[in-house]
Image (tube, rainbow, N blue to C red):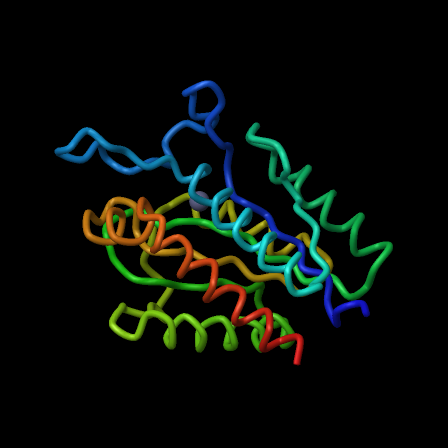
Length: 201
Ligand SMILES: [Zn+2]
């Protein structure tokens, strides 16, 4: 049986190819132990976890960026809209990690889109349940300057669209405990998936 929605997963930025991060910036500081997170690698790990969960539960999905290359936002939007053209059940979900000095979790929607707002509320609730101790950021006025540019994936995609900023990669505790930690990544993916399951009800 087909699921109610088709979930379009978009892992932000480029991954790492032969040790070479494909996107400038978009990385944690080098921590005292020499480790460093590249955001595009993290985003892809979450999408990969989500795909496994969807497969095991017969939820329809499509991976917008199957490549490790940093696909332009314009192309990502085109791919999403093409899916939507053929299947009006589509919901777009962009996955990121935050930076710019802060902590916690937040979700963005395009402006004035009631369906996206409802989806965002469900995600917000599921993250609060999975991570009761973390700071949920509902004030989105602060943040890094390039966030504006990321909004085009929410504005120009024709279906309901949300973007999650999963913790701060320049916050040592959040980066080490969640973003660079296998168990933390599983929990982040699970919280996304719990929201998907709730939407599918
Ligand atoms: Zn990002």
